[in-house]
Image 1 (cartoon, rainbow, N blue to C red):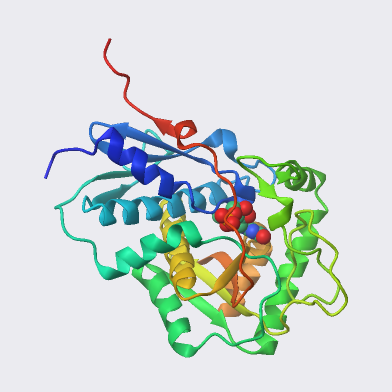
Image 2 (cartoon, helix red, strand yellow):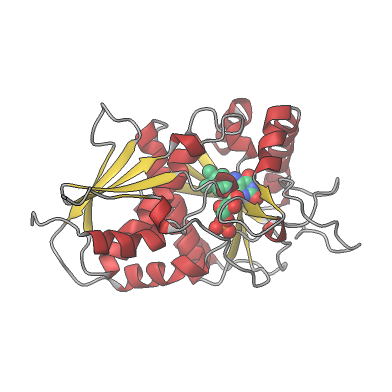
Length: 324
Ligand SMILES: Cc1cc2nc3c(=O)[nH]c(=O)nc-3n(C[C@H](O)[C@H](O)[C@H](O)COP(=O)(O)O)c2cc1C
């Protein structure tokens, strides 16, 4: 079918798109309506030059927003056909969605969609309960459904070996004053429509932690309130590492996060070992996987929490001018 999307349909879906996660909650996306197609664009003004020099994080975030858009349109019975990076002359244009044949949403689409407003990064310690095998399988399926892979690190020694790589990447990053300044600049101690609220930052890291935590102004923790001793760590990877592969990985990340939310799980992300090229390569070799790690997730059963703020959708929309 060749009738395009309307402004009202874009506005409604945009509310869900912007719920996607992004590095430091920068929300580095724009949504445009052109010739009846909804377009997802990277917003270069919201890239973090020190933390994300290559724009990897922007493309992951935009891929996640694209996944939410796909679910919102599917649930509205106006599913999309997607082309990634449709115009080489416009590299910031990451995806174009045009209406596909209308159909009823599947049950999976409905439950993924319902999880969008409930998902948030939970940086608190999780309960020690194990994630059952069938739920682990669903997480792997989520990555595979989006042409990616998920490697779950099983056992204390695998997690400890990963922890070494992650902590060393964390130390490398922390040595860079520009990187530290960026984390500080996006930390919000007062209510704000972007950035990481201090209340969502999780507790301060401590020397005994297996995994490094990004310092988002979190509180010191009481004695004995340590992180779970054997966290379930998942590494999400793609088969290539082009800009398109990173948008694909962003979609896989969001599907995985929504499947986890739907299964009652909490997740936090840690990307230090992705951001430091030598650490990323070490991680890749340690997994023995073909492809490129794109994100690391800590998965478990957590305390309830709250979604973080987003900018008004009007700030990210680019609509055709109304003729005078
Ligand atoms: C590419 C990328 C990298 C991220 N890296 C980290 C990280 O290293 N540590 C962390 O605590 N959160 C990380 N996050 C999570 C963001 O901080 C989080 O999505 C954002 O603050 C919005 O909050 P929400 O996930 O609760 O909606 C990352 C998210 C993305 C998309």
